[in-house]
Image (tube, rainbow, N blue to C red; front, side, top):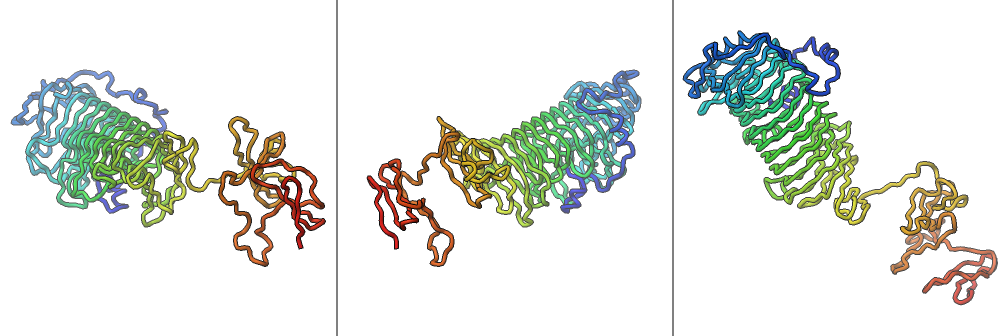
Length: 598
């Protein structure tokens, strides 16, 4: 369930923050919190409760049939537990009216007995959806552990929520508005929108960057997005297992979602950021009525910056594995697996950093239907880099391994992708010609390919290769290129294996304004250079030279007088030179032989 800023930009529905209400205390919280390095630095407010309240003492009765309404008993027990610890027994406890939302208004600790402690929403079918539990901002440091929440009784259906006015956040099953909330061992299912939503509200508006420092650990969500909207800009089903709508500094770990319409969301526009670790999404469902591509069937959707994601696994999503939005910049992902998505493993809408990205069997919807990775710069020019370190791909259905497109707006990008062997039904890559800043390095069985997914050699380059001198080269007349006699004597050396001092030195000579090839044994002497000794014509000079040309000629050695030396023999070849004094052309064939030149 996405919030309003993105929806205003792209004409989507207003999902969370139709207006942002400022928070006056967040800056102070950041100042006073110290450096947040982990859950250990956030202490529970109710670490030593002044007393324990047992909900059974307030008439709480388990009734899986929901014939008994537990609303009054739970309300009374919660009121009595303010500042204390509330024990909920095993059993199913039903909230039977449309206004039965269990509001936690004071700091407390609520302790269930595990998955068998169930809070069951049971409002009459056809009534507006509403939260099952709402932890209010007035209850900072509240702890809730070891219970289950079911937001949809069998056979029921609910209508558009009105709990937060027109804001759909009222359809979240478990709303967390309190700073420093701590939830552990929780199971939430069948939320009308999200199952768990981290986001504080003021009336129908979201509060920026609130709540702060929420911790969720060992969370199981399923079938979230059960509500079927029949009106509004987004129709059908829409909801995530966990949506961090506005939580700043949230820590979410060890979470599993099964068959929600989106597994997990780090939302945009509300100041949300945090760390996510050990997160798994299974079978994210797509709703064909939901026309917005990023609203359903996605394992993990991220729209906010400055967050860290570690050990993320997405299995069998009906749309994409991961949606990485343009606004999710300065985010780092590590150890990511996406397996068997119907479309892409990752849809990159903007810059990010991914370390160890494994994509398995993408484009499950059809052979050559989709690439493994889609890089789409159509939103706006990317001002930061996309970095993917160690991308691995296995599968046979992807059209290409990597597709980078700017669509109609022709926006360029910068990026570096290092990968193992890459392949696709049509090609390994499909890179729009307007995208010039993306570099791809892939390693295969035979070597590393730079721009070449099928490296046949230890270093295999495709495309333009430039080797630029770090400083101006010297004149070849001063220092032979390829020698060790001086620095800057050429900037490319091609050397022998056994005798690396034997090499071809190349470089541009700015003093004499020409390019130099020099065969050289460094520190010793010049060496012969053979052109096509195994066959093939050697073409020298300008083709179709005009009669009035002043350049484009081949040049041969010349002496002032007849040659007298004995050239080193080369089998099947003869040396030649020109005598500028006697105007003769000489060829050595067992001795020097000449013809006069008129």
